[in-house]
Image (cartoon, rainbow, N blue to C red; front, side, top):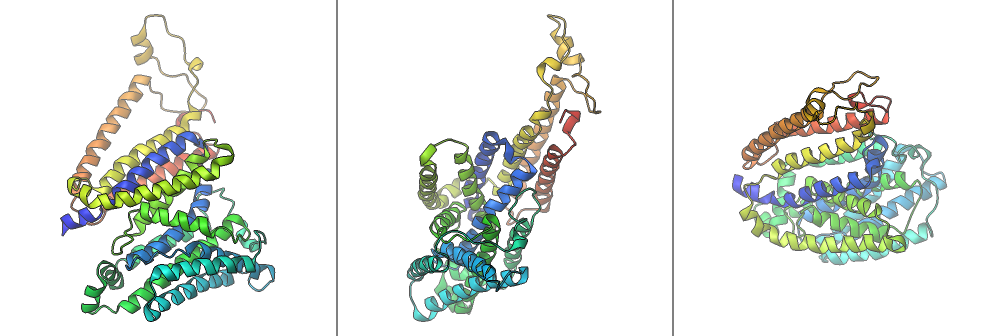
Length: 448
């Protein structure tokens, strides 16, 4: 069982490796990302795509090749509906907006499920019909981008801080799915995704399970529409096609099987973050008038490559099953956080001319005995050689610890408690550095 579980989680290695590479490039190309406002803006922009990918993930796990191509137009439909109702004064409060958004998402997905179950139409046909119908309805409700979102949403989309209501929505959605995976209903959902006939013969009420998967998807789309409305502070009926393509690409990139039975919130989250990082990295290059074309082309190429990698994962997994995805995540996270810390604190380093001059030829005294120039704030003074020694020692300890974790976690079904604590400490350290960098405090006694 443990070997099978390790093999089934091998698909996470690709998005984990990709997010480490992209995040490293992103913080080097755009250092402003490593700040309170940078992370806050990233959360605001990536939240709608993340929740749309969650919705597709819930449907893909249920099997039958259920990929709701209408997820983008549905998100836009809820967006323009909320804005239109706010403009006429029908719905403006938080309770009413959440009720309308979640209700519309669930009602559409219920209709989708009932057509698939009782009319027995293939899911892809229903999804394509919904895509075309909702795209037209959106233009009827709001012919062009415009309108005004509810007033209380204005502060949600500012992106000036990491901790915002949008982040809370994403965390609640993620935690909700993780708690859902502990229920027997989720086990039945995965069984139905792997083999619907076998699940039926085992006594699983597949119709109820499929309806439940669509209800969950509707809730995710509703939450995504709320985040999208907060992001643009208006209505936009034209973003359906782009959102659908991006969400499907993120779904496949996260390792979720379109055939059903395999997938989870971890892969979907990694896939969505990878797609956002690709757009961010491309935005740091100046492609001029073809910027949008290059971005869409990149999404298409990545989608094709992701599908090919999905086919190769069972073959490759047999040869790299000894590598734990979570162990690889810890090693790569350590490297990436180190790069972020370097970028976040680079402005506090002393310029070279501030160092005291040393006698010519006396290199030993200069590098081993003379401390860096004093600064106004108290700090720990280390020579360059001492700093390198401490960094090498710390890197050696981290590598040894990571190697032992990889060895311990290779046969584990879930990430161990120590890994959760370790990753949490890394994130808290990063947030602390970003907070100090954005405020009046500085690291190591450097100048602000």
